Length: 483
Image 1 (tube, helix red, strand yellow):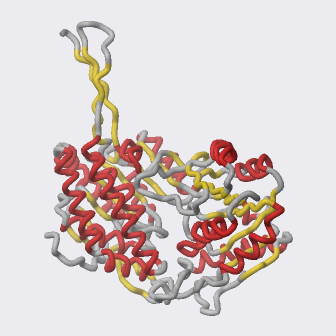
Image 2: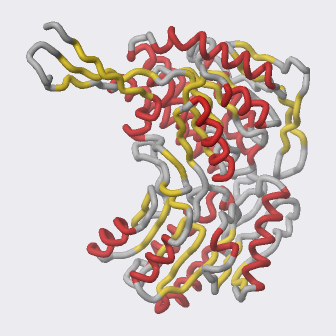
Image 3: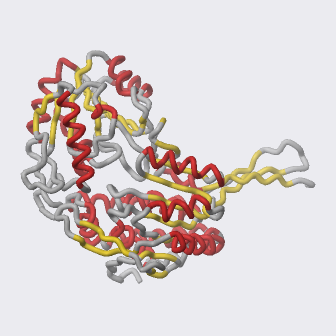
């Protein structure tokens, strides 16, 4: 079983079967680097989704009833298969998502790390015995699986955003329906193929592909069998799902938009800060929810920082993800290009200057040149919206108090970064920033062992770490009397 090669799947995976839509409909998956159709995938509808819900519901008692070590071993087999097929998975991801192969390989390893982590956490779901209030009673708590989970995942990390949810859910004893982005369904289907080969039972892990998110969300949100929603995506859609979940009081986890500040104080190691800003900003062509959106540099060091930063950014190579020299791949589609161009236009009309780039790459298509704007103002659209492109905006600040206030002046609160060599400042600023994740002297913050999630309109709940499995567990209180 563990020696089987990965299969290239284009049909949905429901109840252990590869299925087409009842209507026969299919939708195309496009390579963003070339514009070419790379696959035609089953386009499931409302009735198909109900079938998937029924499969997950039927599979739940058996899966949740297994002892923890059985679930852990199944997840560990899946983890091993993901690593074994890292290169094939990365090739699929780069073809449908566009990111450089080196980044795709890194994401596959990152995705696998969540499966490994939660395979271990499955054996550490503990209840409690509580000191009783009378001599005739005993009090205890049990941790039990929430039930059927619907997970909705985005296109920018088509493997890791699945395993971060599914690994925790399966470890807890839940069964899952995943709806991957219609832009990047092939990675999800490849993961399902490996899950099947790992021996995860039919109905436990289902992948529902559809070009119309409403075909998934309407039956899922109206079903009383689906007890939890886990969503990664835009804040607007997250709010809509939260409202719909109220009718059946579903558990909800939301990982939504960000507007990350990246603060460089005048006591920072400038070279390290430049490297951290590049890692945070330009990874995946700037298409991550924890990307630096606003780079605040203390006024005395702004000229030095901007010169060093521009020199390094100018060395980044744009190209198709399959190129060995590529640092930045294409944006996901023309809509993404249009948004970046609109934000740059608004900023330059408001007084910002283009220090580097500012337009499409000579490659054309959806390839955008790495860009730096200087003279950013907090009133600009680019300061308020997620850029989701390879565009940095530099802002000047004077005092610590000022930059904290400006950094927090947003509805979002996912990730923040700052560079300083002052120990007291590192404590003060990290405590005052209103963000769920804070990186100090680093631009890379994501790991399976740390909790990932935001404050304010950036979401609810945490993924990864020992806290991540709690999102898929109910706490049941048992009071035993008559003793």
